[in-house]
Amino acid sequence: MQLSNAESSTVLDDPGLDNPVLGSLAGRHRGLAIGDARAVRYPGEVSPFMAIADDADAEDWVALARLAAPGPVMILDTTTAVPPSWRLVHRFDGLQMVGPVGDALHDASILARTAGDLQLVRLGSGDVPAMLDLAGRTKPGPFLPRTVELGVYFGVRDGDRLVAMAGERLQPPGWSEISGVCSDPDYRGRGLARLLVETVADEIRARGARPFLHVVEGNDTAIRLYRSMGFTTRRGLTISSYQPESR
Image (tube, rainbow, N blue to C red; front, top):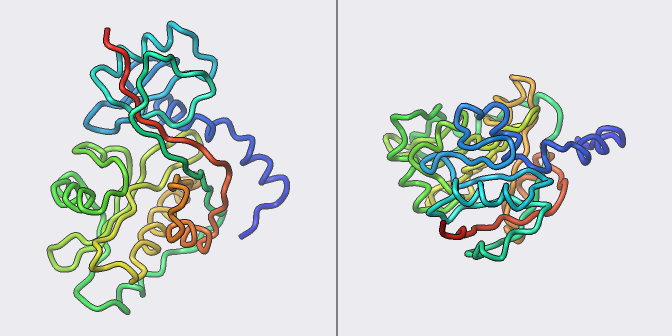
């Protein structure tokens, strides 16, 4: 589904997507927030992401350093210069993509067409060990012991084995990020990632929000999949890991 010119302009100008970590911690995830409206982070066992106000000054960076210690931590873009005392550990370029408006339901028949005893299931705290194992083997991005608290997660099981999953991460006003998309190498190419992304997107739309996601630039397989599902690129961005100054 293509965006209309008016809708496209609204999405491009949505400030909630410009600083989604800050918006999320001031909104649906405020119960997890550590800090204040200008310098804030998630608990370390939930997510490594932290954020700072767009007009941050030196004192805000000092406050963020205190919250970050001992680090390292991750920052999703920033419009202010990072102090030289913050050592860059790693940086990669990515794309922010927004999902289409609509209520297209996931195609559960994918499971029926796939060999094995596969089941689509909602995941919870009791599934965390299996989720950590799958994420550790497939590297979809940061997934920690309490990441599941960020939102809804779905998985595909083959018998007792978790072989694929996807869920929610950042939730700025009106939006929810699809994240943690991964499949066991033995189960790739079966449409499970599509099924899970569509399932999570349906959950997001059902509560009146809209899905978006971040993908590493150069991950052409994932980008092609998301585009085939109607996701469009809103902007490029950088995701950086920093070791803050010692205090």
